[in-house]
Image (tube, rainbow, N blue to C red):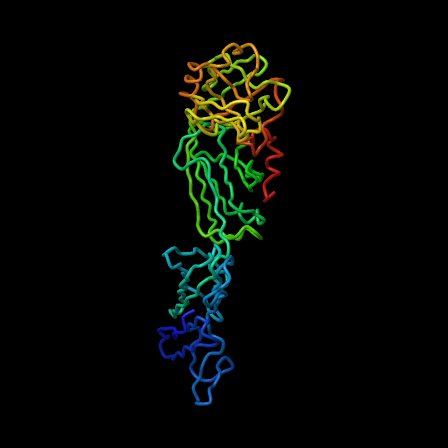
Length: 403
């Protein structure tokens, strides 16, 4: 905090005189609160015969050059009522706040962030004013996150908001409170905490049912100053992302019939033969709802990356990723003899070049692939890509840290 004596100005009422006095250490912000016109029970007399109002300062709960971050800023008035308070960070951002009903205390709506210098300015109802400063301690460890989907993108109706954290999150409720979702049509949804396939903490937000086409979604993550807990560190910035939901497209994969169909707004626009994963072992495909994570074009697929030894190493066209564990939909011309007849792939949904190109050209990230049939090794897990749709709505809501 600045050690300079605060400048306090006040226009006294007619016929009265005012004495403005600094009380306590330099951490007190002082303002005129009591006008004195002679000694009384409310007035102290100095040895020199001067009068002063006792305990007439404005105090701030955070002070010095290494104040503890993560706390709201509180400005308290000893007597009288506050008229206005501003708390501004060194980069110019101001903390919003409210004055209490009795006018004595102002409290910021957000906490003080680590490693930030703040300036406090306050006025009282009688026109007294003052300013002071403090700086919060630097964060010993910083937590960061990765957001999906990307900003200003258009996605399919099954795309959740997904937040993956660099470090563990112990204080899940505090973090979740700072993640504000708004939509153009008041869609209701819930956050659910889970373990990402990478092993990191993750929280996703999904509606009860697929998004309505055209919905505009905004995530305002006011995380600056939030402590994520032991081993996690502090957030030192906010995050903002927006996206729009596109057409209602669903890809239906029938493992038993060996067919794949694309429906748009309930109307079938594509129906092609395919061959999925070989049943009875690790090469089988997953069932349930998998969400298209990315369209990757031509990529090199190697079996050892998904725990299948040296079974294959080849360039694959029209690759559409469905899970982190390596299930894709893609062109598989080497498997043409099994399309529409049997599931004989290493776990992916394979089609002819022409059919894969037709599907690739129409689907978008966030479209659901609804996979049904007996020839599967289990259901897509919630953290293996975007498997939240395989969890009942009640169970998903129970995964919120605020329930």
